[in-house]
Length: 623
Image (tube, rainbow, N blue to C red):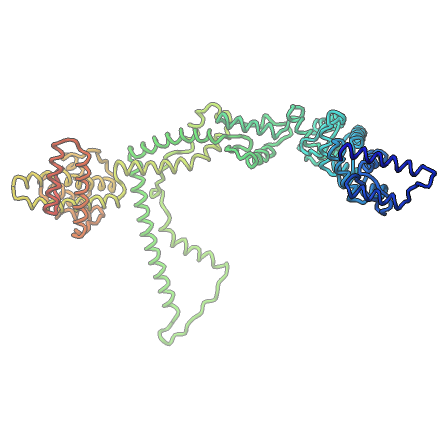
């Protein structure tokens, strides 16, 4: 509306008022007034709102003033529905004006259909502070019920005024709970006194009940006391010891560090609980000793090196070979005893069956009355008689202990700190003993296999492969026409594969007969070992050794079967189908070696062998 239009409106209004006040006959009727106002509204020269009954007009500016007046009169908070009834204006119009007021006035807001100004907010803050000082604590949930306002609004309002208009602090664990410093100090004194009076392990629920402290603040105060050291906790002390033990890779006995009222069993319960709770790598020994995993690992490594030395010592001294031989003898004897016992039982069953018929074919079958405990002793005696043969004699028993408990204790006592706790040494001995003995046996077996080839199956496969290669290489040698070359290759074949064959047989025979076998066998040492062997295998091995010494492949192949049989091995028949695979593998090995070599002489040598194999489909043993 322009200023000229507004001036026109004011002029008309003045004329209208003058006409109404005039006592002349120029007064306007109510109908004329309605027509004038309607005309003004239609021409947008005047904006008015109708009352709910439609009998009165009111401008938006006046309605806003009325709303503000009613808000002030109601103490800064009024319901929009209530305003509608008081002002006799439609709810839509009241809500629209209220929204405009909220938009342009930061001190006014609409909450849950209610208009609230800053004065009411200040009043709420003052009341909250008074109640907090009076009671010592407040809860947003209680304020929500009391003021019938949203919890988020009250929460935000309280947090903004905290430390300013509201003197208190917010609970760290429950942000909807507020309390005063005096309230916290009062309850802290209660909790400190209750904790100081405890002489035995006490449930927290009992402490809360006796001290009459709200549970929601008990734990936060308790944590503060722990952090400041005013209420040192046993569990924290145990956790600290565990962390230190793990960090230093050591061990500690915490029994002297605990209160005297604690028994070892109580401490063990706490330690087991810490294992589940902390999930740290530590072990519990002697009920109260904490041992880190790293300490046990380091100790185990040192003991394993000692176990390795003991395993080597057992193999070198011959104790391991004696143990292996005695174990096999004992196993064979047990099998024989079981077989004899089974035969005896079968004989008794046959006799019992034949005794049922007495007096020939006309004899009557006699029934035996069932016996009870009176005759059970006799039955047991029969069983004892049967098992007499199975009882091991003292001379039959041979037990090999590579790492004894006494030796292990001696090693553990070398650690100064360990020797101070005798019971810990005993438990560590039990902890490591079985493991170390298993390791010693495993290492002894590995050393024995590496030095004396105790794995009979591997020896058998190796010997069969040697004989197969000798046959294949002999076939290749026969294809060469030059006699001198044939003799040279034959001699080389015997000195390499033939000597390997007799050496492996002698090593195996030494293991089987518990004889010492030198690492490097010479002609003299082989002959000496053969003389020490039993007669049942001496002749067969002598034939092989003689064939090798003579350089005869034919004699070697003819005597190999009986020699291997004497050592309880089987010489497999020559498989012609496998011959091609062996020759191909030999050729591939030569090709790989040729690729890697940089020596011209060796390259020529390998090339010659490869060309021979390609031309004849046979192989030569030349290197």
